[in-house]
Image (cartoon, rainbow, N blue to C red; front, side, top):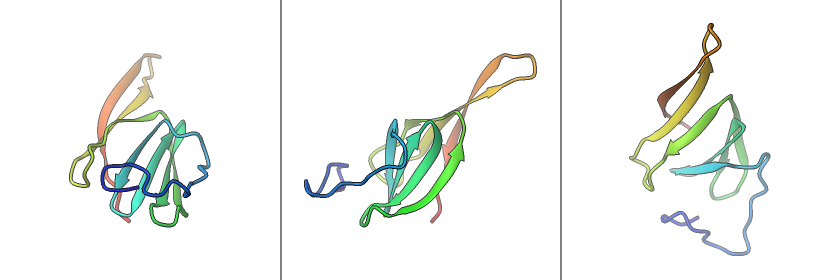
Length: 94
């Protein structure tokens, strides 16, 4: 992917472990958000770096540059059965 988030080479493709619902680029890494997981891949090689279990985590805003925050929403179930959504900044350090 280039700096604008577009595919840099039409012959290159990455096979994901899960179906991604959102993605964000951070430095040399591509973070793919799917149901229950965040998949971290090296953007140059496509190699899987890490799978992070993250139940009910959704990417809300990632911006197009490395210095903008990755804002996520986390849905939690309270003891009374109600659901609460919390906003969180996702910080990834390689």
